[in-house]
Length: 543
Image (cartoon, rainbow, N blue to C red; front, side, top):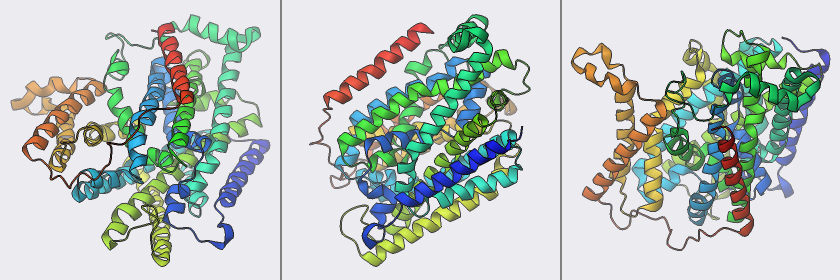
């Protein structure tokens, strides 16, 4: 497509502005150098609006904007269940998970596992998450981001790949989580506004004199099949979104793991001023998730009428951007870059946090100020320096590995889902048992992790190539979400049996939960009820 001069001016102004703001909020006040609590947990001082905005900015990136718009083009509004069910999941995380995490001053998910189970599983899961974040998530974000930049702006993809990665690194390397979280309100505002502009203009194009509302009515009239929220078994995309399972099945496993036990996401809530502030941020994020399908999915559905002959569904969003006039295109493109940069910066910071606090500090026997108020000043400076080095190395690895890993993939988004889905059921089992079943042991937790991968491989493998075991081929036909649910329950049973057979000593569980108060404020309850009622109305309308 290419950008006009005015578009380039808007994009450059955004880049300078957001970089300057990040450096401003990162400044050392009163001459005091940053310690590990400042760098990795934003001094545990984040307000609710920063938490909510940062949760969404970390979540939404190129793979979701381009990928979900493409799914909207191919499947329809049913893909919005990923967003809308996430809103409900966030309420559960805020009410039942965060009180335990914040009561025990948890700063990383591997740290929780050590305090609940023991040191072996902390190291095991820290290494796993680092590998997943660097070689799957981070590479996918910058690779898909570079494709989007190439398609919209005509920038060489390699240049875009390097540019996005290095800009995200420099943007957050000085201030850590505070630089990311306190600027994410700007990023999310730009993302939502830009996405709503695309939706409004595409619907206006369809509606003509009827405007936006007329366009929406025309879209629902001419493409009614794209507004089925619960797909029937005869739908060609049933295997991706298997009917009622999106409401009561495997999607819960993925959502609980992602929003409740994922360092990359939950780190924002762990850095809150207090539990009340964290819960308000969670509710704010839940309402933003309700809006996201208007920003991401609706333009893809509109492309069914405006560009019915696309070669690939993922071309839907870039194609709709061609409708935008100069100037506004630059603003929406800046919103796309904002989503990529914010998500990349968040991932880099979480990689640095886990490497520094869960591997480096533990190996040195150091107790950081992220963990308690004590700590040697020189050692704290070393931890911050190690975090910055880890951040730099991680993005350089991702830049180099992106093309070999994803260059030949038809759907990079599916690459993420398939790989992550092997581990998601086991992770969910480990944390749910750790939070709510006192008899869970480290042996049981490790069993769940191993069983999750092993059973997922059995379902995933094409057994038709092994004549003696061809009877297992039917497993491969089971929809991905249903597979996760089956593997979850199988791993859960195995973990409980092993925990009973090999119980942990009384001293193994250092998580305090007996005095945790799960009561929430009236404002949280009213806001949560609002989310539930909106979801009921949405699904009742488009069932």
